Length: 230
Image 1 (cartoon, helix red, strand yellow):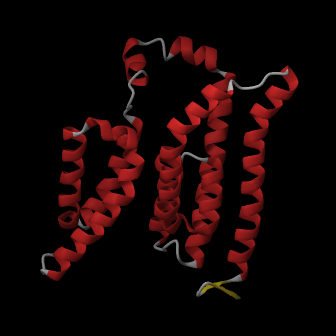
Image 2: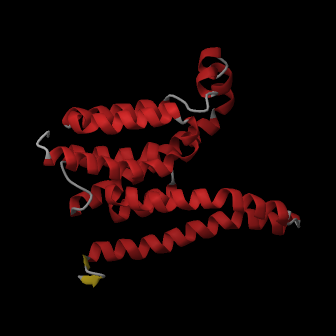
């Protein structure tokens, strides 16, 4: 085991961080290579003035959300699950719920060795299943569009800016935690509902609100515990 800034890393974690950094770098290189190859093959270059305007308007928000997600989700996923989830994406509505459910069913935490392994497996399986579903959808995109998505009711569901899938998923997961500690959950839940109802614009920066409400929920739980309410 080696010591890094006061934290003891075992052999598995050292290997995970080493491999995770390598493959994260490879994923970043592949992502950048797509537009770069388009430029090289077709002999085109971006309109730099528009490019930098777009970067300035978009990057600050996404960099902030990206950094916040690392601090917020890493403790839930463990080291292996974190690297894999951030490379494959779709954390909030796929990878984090999959890892969380797997660890809850086994009764382990992400900080344990068992949790590390389970989280990584859950995220990996989730990624594989998602990829397979996308492959099937691409193979049958025309029949699916003609037979299913042509229905007016289903089309109206898929055309919504904020669909029903994510709320349904987090609602199902949230019920479990609400049932365990419903007293602690009431105040944060009411506050978040009030914020979204009174300030609809926060939908566009909802990623930033996640760590804010996480800290606020901990403080509320601590306050209730000190007063003997939970």
